[in-house]
Length: 322
Image 1 (cartoon, helix red, strand yellow):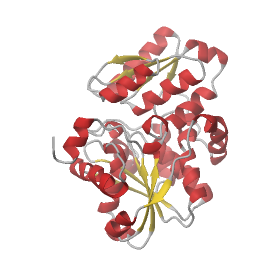
Image 2 (cartoon, rainbow, N blue to C red):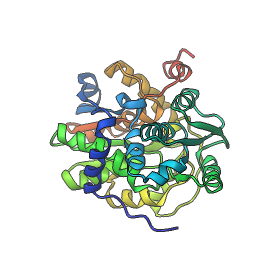
Image 3 (cartoon, rainbow, N blue to C red):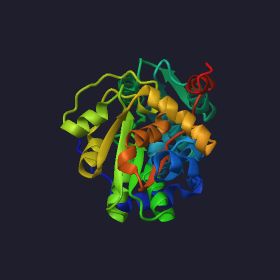
Image 4 (cartoon, one colour):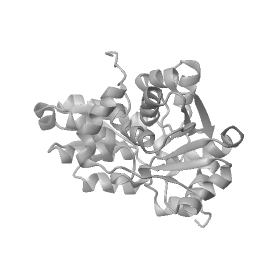
């Protein structure tokens, strides 16, 4: 495989010029209840308020927006547990192209419906993302479409890095940014941007204990398949990927694993203190902050609420009424 060059902060600024007409600048808000809970100055970057309810559209719009006319004619094929797929569908529609998304057989029905509403062809294949991804690559080869890997794409990482530019422009003297990690595109973007514009800011990744592939690769440098037993769709990968792990090993300051229960508790904490919905992956940032509480005491902390695409059943389970 051709070695991929990590994006630079200049690429992130370029991505912002591409995507600005098509996204919203999400709010960064301080919540006194979270400040009291953590004994820190706590802010939330609300990517759960972004177009399609997650940070992912930033990356898709940058990738497809930089495509050629020929690429747009051939269309795009990708695999996704949900939010990345919506991103590619939305971008394909925005630039007059087409998209096919391969999703796990148990994919979130809200996310599947959203992709179909955006005009995409959705194919269910495999028990989790990595199996779906193999099928997506084969389909792209067969149909001549542009295959899009959910992580190993510099244009995706540059695109999602734009939310971190907004964080640093809207708030100074940030001690910690805590970012959910599935494949690692969001944390990679945050790490690249923070290293360039605020080197004193410590970027912390957080991943599910029940799907620790990227954590394991970041810690050891080895790319070995790991268990994948998490209910957090946005964190549900059994493999780590070279591009994001390379960036994280260079720039990420710390990495915290959180339990399934801690993410459920995090969903409830977001409802209680911010009056907003996050999905399991988005809740992992507050779950990590609670786990790191002693370390964060008295510091200025930004929690990334990476997505809010939660089903009613998932919400009931999180608040104990299912």
